[in-house]
Length: 166
Image 1 (spheres, rainbow, N blue to C red):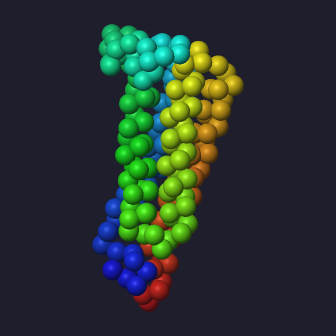
Image 2 (image 1 turned 180 degrees about the vertical axis):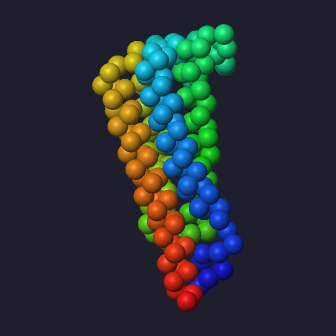
């Protein structure tokens, strides 16, 4: 471990930061497919738990209904994104506290993810209100930007520490 706290053998922070970028991008693509395939209301679109987080009141979609599978896949892939974003923020706060920008952007990504999950629920329960849907896409773009910036900062940490060792 270097004097800055960076462990050259530990690529875990990079794995989580880069995984956050890739998985967030894929989730946005899946969300776009939900919209263009008109699958957004396939699991229901009304207030209450019938439509969110459940799919027409069931834990799983009707797998013979492609629209439900498409909509539900968007919801399920959130767990992949959450895995990477939560992993990044836990590592940043636990092992890299001295790297203030990484902590800040990791935390911002986490807060953005929570807001995005809430806004996704509002999108569904508001009967796919276009203004809410546009806000959902806008926030997704902002979260993506934050995780990209964070991944670049994580990469730069490694590069800057490599230069310090020379």
